[in-house]
Image 1 (tube, rainbow, N blue to C red):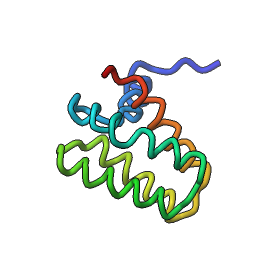
Image 2 (cartoon, rainbow, N blue to C red):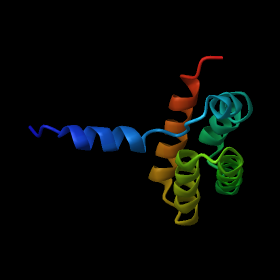
Image 3 (cartoon, helix red, strand yellow):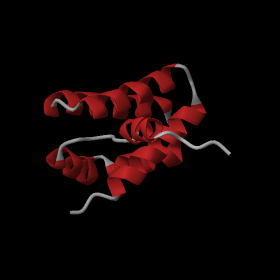
Image 4 (tube, rainbow, N blue to C red):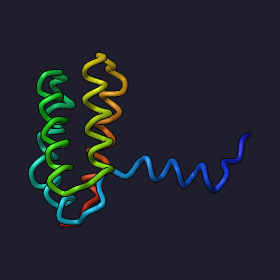
Length: 102
C-alpha cells in the first residue's frame, strides 16, 4: 500500500477541476452537457475536436484556466488519436458537469 501525501491529493484534486466560475458551470450544463453525452456515443473525432475548441473559446471568454487546460488536453488527445484519453476526458466532463446544481 502507498499512502498519498496531502500534497499529492491536493494536486490530483486540482487537476480534476474543470471550471472555477459558477456562471460558466451553469453555461456548461445547459449548453454543453447533452452535446458531450452525444459525443460519448458517437466517438466522432472531428465533432469532439470542435467541441473542445468551443470549450477553449468559452474558457477565454470566462478567463478560466482550468477549462482551458481541459479543452487543450482534449484537443491534443483527438490530434494524437488517443481514444483512451478522449473517453476519459468526456466521462470526466459529464461527471463534473452533472453535479452542478441548477
